[in-house]
Image (cartoon, rainbow, N blue to C red; front, side, top):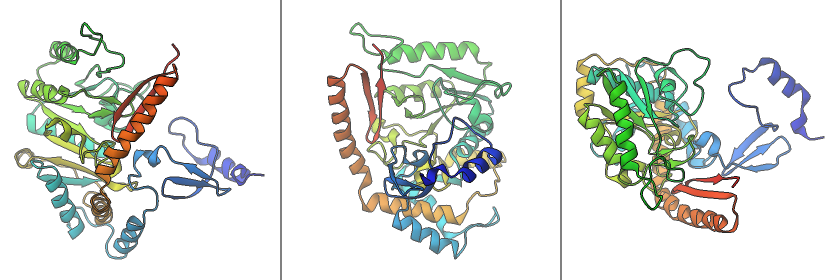
Length: 368
C-alpha cells in the first residue's frame, strides 16, 4: 500500500485543518529539491506551479539553505523599530535594479505589500477609490481582497468603499476590435475609464495592476497599454501601483515586467519570487511619495516588517539570479517553450491560444 494512504495522517488533516480553497492533493509531500517535490513513496512530482508560483530558484537551493542556516543563527527577527544590515543592503540592491524607486519597505506576503501600497496611495493623494482589473488577484486581506476580482468576492459582505473595476484586456477574446479582428485596446481603455469617471465620487486614489494577470488567465497587457494606463492615472491625479508578485525578479525575461514598456510605476510591489518560496515582500516607491507619506504620518507596523532573516534570503536570491543569469535564461528558455507550445496549437484544435512572456506562459484550451 502506498505511504500516501496513511489513514492517520488524512484523518488528522480532515479533523483539524481549516480548508482554505479547493481540495488537497492526494499525496503527502515529504521533501522538495530543484524542480521536483517528493511524496511519501519518494516519487518525484514535477512542480509546474513552482510551489505557490514562488520557487524562483527551485526547491532547496543550496544558497538559500546556507543563508537561512547562517542568518537564523545570527539574528532572525527584531523589534520593528530596529534595523539590521540585511534589510538596508536589500533596499539598496532593489533600488539599484529599479531606478527612480528609491525607497523600500520589506514585509512578508503579497497581500500585505498591496495593503501597504494602497494605504500609502490613499494617504498621499487624500483620496480613497481604488481601481483594478476585472480578472485581478492582489491578495485575500482587506483592501487587497477588495481589489481582487478573479475569485472570492461572494459571501463576505461589502468590499471596501470605493472599489472599482475595469475589464482586463484579452487579445484572444477582445471586447473591442479593429477591422482585422485584433484587440482595439485603446478604445477599450477609453471606454473603461468613461465608466470609471461616471461611477467615481471624485476621489480616485490609485489603479493597481499586474503587468500580466496571472490568476486571471495569463492576460498580458499589450505593448503600449501600460503607458496609456499611466497617462489615464496622471490625468486624474491617481497613482499607478504595479503588483509584480509573479512577474518580478526575472520570470518574464526582464528583471521587472514593466521594464519592457519603459514605464516606471509610482509604487511597485514584489512578493513570491523575491523570497524564492520564503515569506518576503517589498513595497518600492519614489523618494517624493515616501517623503509625503511620512510627513502625513504613514503607519504600517507589522510583526515582521524589516525582519533580517527574509531580507538575507532576498539578497541571496538576487545574487543567484545575477550570477546564474536567470533573467536571460528566462527570456531564452521562454522563447523555446513558447515555440514548442505554439507548434501544439498548430497540431491540435483544442489549443486555442498560447500567450505570456518569458517563462510565465499560459495555454487556453477550447471546445470549438
